[in-house]
Length: 625
Image 1 (cartoon, helix red, strand yellow):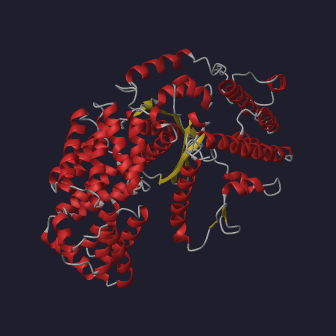
Image 2 (cartoon, rainbow, N blue to C red; image 1 turned 135 degrees about the vertical axis):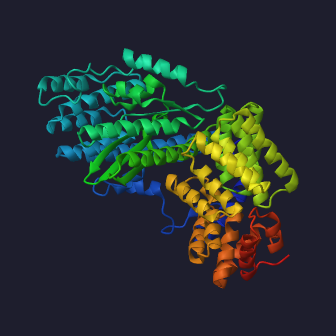
Image 3 (cartoon, rainbow, N blue to C red; image 1 turned 90 degrees about the vertical axis):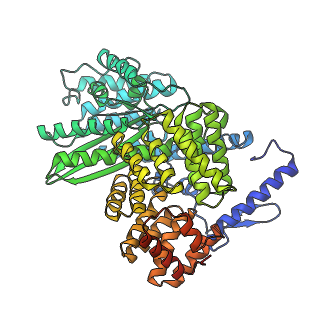
């Protein structure tokens, strides 16, 4: 199925090669997971745990496996082969049918309205057009006296059917809606002064005008291939009702929106524009249609005694309103303005960094021929970050292709500069001098094409500091980037590394800590974590340096540069057994690594710092030269 277009013998040869790679990948598990013979390839029973098996074994009495059904089965493997696509479609349908039948059985077994709401929502996560689940949700809210929520559920049902099936609710659902309207059990959730919710296809005049002005103010980009990911934020829902909390929620929404708007590849719809529409309905499908949104941020804010709590989630409106990111932020409420600034900065930093990965996965699932320059670049960055040599080489080709698709788009030039820097760092460059020159040219070209792109400025700083060994010039570029966008975690981290190269360890630590607070799980965090290890070592905090070194190598075990300060710290502490393992891994990745080679390439400027790092490497058993 994976090679159906090839001759039989060639397909079998490809299969044998992939089985060999699979067995090598599974070696670290230390046990035989796969049984292979001439005719069969099977997972050894009782050794491997498979999520799909858990879903298929779930029952109404033991439904835990249902929670594993998150998104489509093998959602990144579409388009591998026509025969495989046919099999995959059938397997997805089989899995959905099983989950739907189980969720329906669980819903039928609920008599308490609170449990019925949970069961109905679970069924709707599987099948958003399931009218039986929508009716159960409406009835349960009505039983609880929540007439407004029941009315809202009907509007969401109608929007889902219109969007996914181009259909109206059935007569049974409409009769239930008429009964709820006539019941008058409680005050509707929408204030009486507000107009009734409009159908998803019809945008209220005020919101329509706001949307048009937003579209004029926030163009999609100069080229249709340059991304233009559209994101908006709904006004935060309030757990409290005081004037102070209301002002705080509105301020947070605006601050987060403003933070996101500083990222050049995002098109951000203002929070105030969405607020007018959200006053009438918070339905995600209607908002997507009205404002052409790709992603929507929703959340709540509340003050609990002396603490401020903000809960946020990011919905993928093109992926069935799936929650693709969520975080909770807690702060003391002593200084609400300071807390608001901190939370907004962290939220914007984490959303933009994680969204880059989410969009890269979406691009990877599409045929390469359908991608524009921006999506081709995203696909390449995701492949590049894995630091697997064959994929890494493909990533370089994709970045060059992105530049060819749109030569005036600066971002692919910047990322190809990073690719060259990593090529040198991993000791994969055939001609390090030529790669250094190309990286410098690409970084300068990226800044020239878009002088206001903070990421391009940051990458130019990386090239100046790490390859050209001119950290003072790099710091100036980083500071300019942070003026444009103070929420870039990667820029704070890279600028911290540059300060360490110059010898200012206090400023380096401040900047590195700032990067970690903003986005502790940044996808390119492996580039800056080695600097945290080196700063601790140079300050004489060897135990902390070892902890940082372990963390750096865990973030991306393939990144060879992360092992160098880690190994030096182990040498200073005399941890010879651990040092031997780290040294072996480093020399396997970079066979020619010596103390002299390290001193020739390191950007650390102060002689005392260079000597301390070199002494640690010698003590860890690294050859002198």
